Length: 256
Image (cartoon, rainbow, N blue to C red; front, side, top):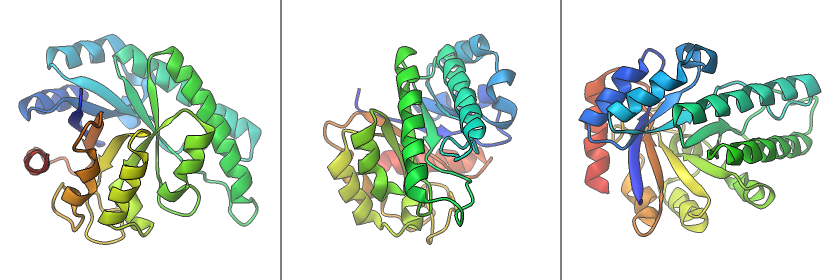
């Protein structure tokens, strides 16, 4: 199947419009953000599936933000897990093949050791991954800026779980990785990194610029994936301007 290209929807985008734009841009999929207006209990799964089919595109999802599956508080953690499990079920009903979940916690850092919370995160990821497998769905855990679970810690996740990874390029840059470092990481873990968020930036900041508008060297970053890699690339730009998205697609295609 090789490399497939798409984009992440943003707050203010309607999924039907996003699917039609993806088709017009010659993209392969849309990564639907399942938060805000598109949270699971607001979605008609059959309608989403039919719209994707009508536009000839595949579907991935970004699972809801701010659900703390590493929380030291049992009921918070269990509630977050229940919501994500329900979101995965809805995503699968929509026809989505994979979903992104954040490797993060909102626990008060002075009071809690990160090592303990990381183990709870891994326990939660194992549960999500097992449930997802029963629904023909792939969980892709995303690196988040900060010291809790940056990209450099993902070998531990690879050893402890069967989940895949979403490498977010802007987040990796915020944690000190340059374009060559990211390429080296992908070269070492290309069997477990099955999804990328192509998040451009001019500096170590979460800018989410249109593709090519920042200083990341995506030619270098993507080089290890050019031969025999199967996965998905999502342009993640904080814009509602479809012109910027179309230009981003053109710039990405010029590199592939």
